[in-house]
Image (cartoon, rainbow, N blue to C red; front, side):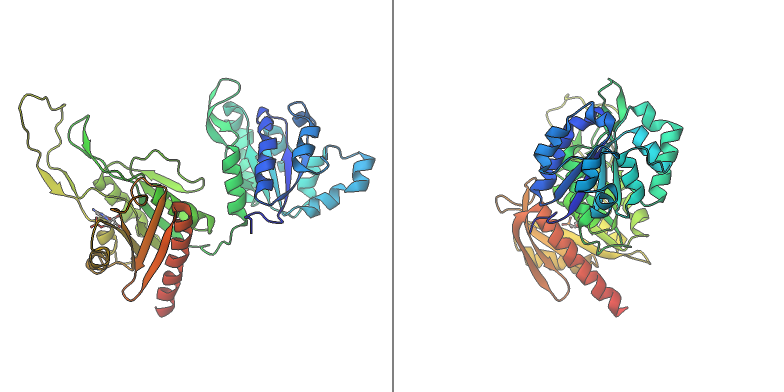
Length: 403
Ligand code: C5P
């Protein structure tokens, strides 16, 4: 079954330049099985035609509150009741203000007043307008009513300004829509996840690190978020984007990750140590760039703290999941770490196998508890992450029930 199968989505388009992206948004939502109906403000029609939206949605586009023919086909109250979710994208400062004020002076604002469906708002406006007191007050009000605020993103704007105010990309809006309908079985849980590599400085320009891409940890963060958890992602330097909605704590070295992990894990229900933490750091980091004067140099290394093992020593410790990237005797080493580090679960992968593990998009895991061994077969890391998150939760609930 498709993720958005039979979901009824009412897309409200208001008058911003990002309206040109909405035909693509409609198509992608429909690709996932959604039935999309479009409502346009007068401003939206200055940027894109109703005919385009009608062609891609396969439905009549509504744009007037006072159109007798349209009211005969599907009246505004009927339309408001039809929707499982209303998405307003792009949402201008004007429509945001009108919804907050409870106005009903066009079809879209009226629908927002007449519906009991959840409303998601994807703001798009000049960065100064976004930061304006009026807009921020309106957004806070809408948030306090339970409306979902999706974005805005940062970057270059159509007006040439740079800053917050861009409508989120279509792919992000589609992800947020499918996350919205996902089963929220982790509600009230707080997951803290470490991800990516750490960098251990040698001098101001050089460091020791590893090939971890962060993809597995970021996929777990997204899967946990989608299932309704609050997620804190403590990440070493990576080139990928954090999932929208997680609390991202950027760190560089193992010592920084250690400090942040201990402070956040103390309040968490679940701690997942997915980071490839450098085992050693440079004993004395050179304050100036090391010159190549000698034929050989020696760098003394000292052991880094073991983050996951230290989290396991916390008096109020969360449910703890470690990772073991091994190249041989996977089960033997993984079980050794499970016991030695005092973990609840350990997810082991064979990084010597081609096409999985470090830097790859795919992975296969064997998850060990003190008594169990569960295989998660080779698949895309996003699929693996969903299965792993569900498995972790089953073991977490089991442990809770025994307390
Ligand atoms: O001992 P090893 O590095 O193989 O253990 C792997 C597990 O321990 C992973 O979950 C990793 O994130 C965690 N770890 C840690 N701090 C370290 C080293 C490893 O949290 N210094």
